[in-house]
View 1 (cartoon, rainbow, N blue to C red):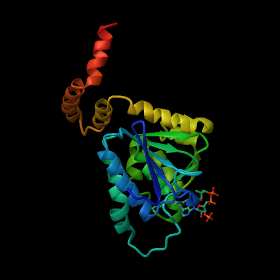
View 2: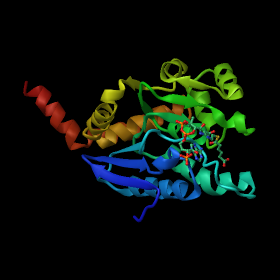
View 3: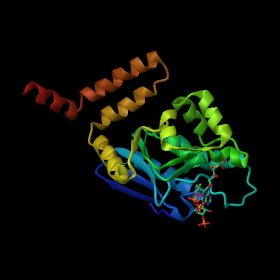
View 4: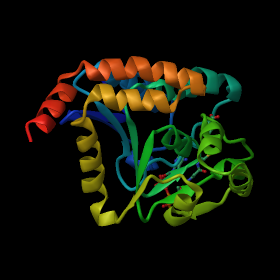
Length: 246
Ligand code: T3D
């Protein structure tokens, strides 16, 4: 796939999607958002990719929407046409989605990071809820994800303030899965992703699906199917045999 604003690599079962506009702190323009959407779809179809990682090149994950683009487009249409296909692809990915966050994560960049299943965060990262500072509502799925991750009143208070918080505060809010010293960040992110990629893909994807079951009864029904599939894998059979041979 020809790309201009992202970098794609696959290694040890991990598909790395790197936002690559470092001179703008990975501000999100239309090309980047469309390339990300196509990349997620491609990784989703590629059996060699068991885990997807989103990261930023340079000194930030993303500074949010590119504010230098002058446009008289209808913002609602832009969301529908450009942001929402990507946000849906992230949300509906069957594979584990990890956001590796360092430097700064702001506005719509934050919304994309919140769509991940887990967030591995370098300690010096700043989280900015920015939207209100330019008179906009939080969008790109951000409010939905904030609501499932943190208390409603704290989320609203933060969004209304437009403030920037440090990684410790973000962890208290529930936005951080694992906080890592800056010097260890890349190594830890890589090992986290590769360890997950080495596990049974059926069990890993099944866990994700079951955590999203719409109701208790749906969950019970879906676990029947997933456990049946897991029981039929070599990984499971070999693990059982190894246990019995002890
Ligand atoms: O369409 C929709 O509905 C989606 C809507 C989404 C809305 C949002 O995403 S709201 C959030 C928008 N983002 C922001 O408000 C953050 C803007 N950036 C900043 O406040 C600062 O850059 C940072 C605090 C993130 C970092 O500051 P600093 O001092 O470390 O770096 P810098 O010098 O400001 O930035 C470096 C370069 O990146 C600079 O370019 P230059 O001067 O070297 O040519 C700067 O202009 C550029 N840059 C940073 N953020 C953006 C950006 N360029 C375009 N858009 C940006 N968001």
